[in-house]
Image (cartoon, rainbow, N blue to C red; front, side):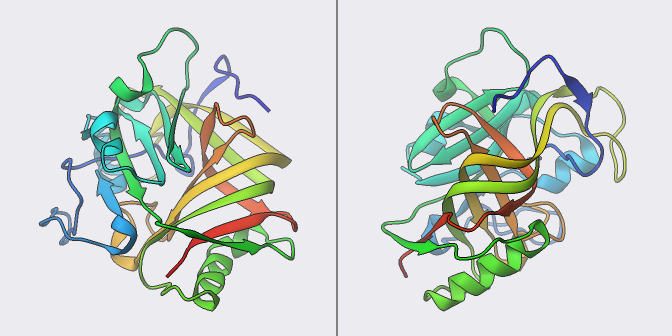
Length: 251
């Protein structure tokens, strides 16, 4: 399934584009970013989700080349100026733009939000049952705990298989209008369906990164990657079909 850049729609609050704050790994205190701290699996967040929601701040926070210099294995984010989505899957950088046409090389782009992590080695966990969209976060937490990870701490994950009941988007442009809770955030390409094959790159975050690395009240930030590894999109809703394979870091 290929995303179509001609079908642009203004996303509602549920299809929120990515936000940003200072270009550094963050340990926020309230609305202010504090000093950088080292987290398990080298999780770093460049920017803040809530800043884009409340202020429409799509300004550049980190160059992708600089973020990739740390050799992250997994990452999710959005391009500056709300022009597209960014994913790192198995160390490979993938960028999809919401509008067709010529675009800069991926490495020369900048991110408005970027959350990255690194796993030195992975453990493979078969998904033995269908997992509904409403169960995804609880399933990831329980599975991580059962395989030696602390679900109260952040960790990267990757998945191969079939997604079900999915809704995803690719940012295309700012709205140019006011921002705030319940207001449109970006113009985007929206895609939804019952099933789609592919991969998932994601970060499960500790509670203090909710609203910063993820939407408020959510613990995961995940992107779909096409089976051929050439395109990506932000997952707003998704479930898993039995037979998928979940990759978790080895503790």
